[in-house]
Length: 114
Length: 115
Image (cartoon, rainbow over all chains, first blue to last red; front, side):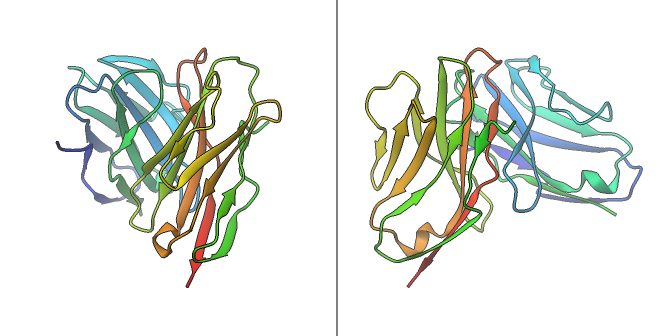
């Protein structure tokens, strides 16, 4: 079946603009995770959902970042008033349950803020 | 303190040799899981292997095995008979079952397999 998909794959935006990054998890997966990955670094946890409920948002850097998963499937990560330091690869992963293993990652969205 | 430590930023290994990638972790929980991901230059994240803290035997998946030493809090990845396609970034990660299940990744080790 289809894996995790993310769109757009690449996004270039000007500083100060808002961006919305979309994640479509594997069908039937309960848990959905967002990560941010700087070049040459490991993924940094941002937030995660079980169904539509946001379980943990302690990794969100500041209040410009928000995420939602209103129907327990597709999720959107929104960054308001983007800054250059927000430039990174944003990755989404999903798993069957919240027991935390075998997360399947999407291809990521490469965000560049100019 | 870092939860996951990978002390080897880069490694060069001759093809067909075995490779050990180091990973140590820090947790006070009794219930946790450890795993390894491979990230080739294409950027995808590929799940390799998983070890639960209560698993008595070391996990193995084909050429991959996890050398789990609980008392030393180490979870090294061993790749037997390395291949050119093994060249990639490798991340060790942990989740603690009593801490909201979020996964913490190490900084990674870049492995280069030489022909």
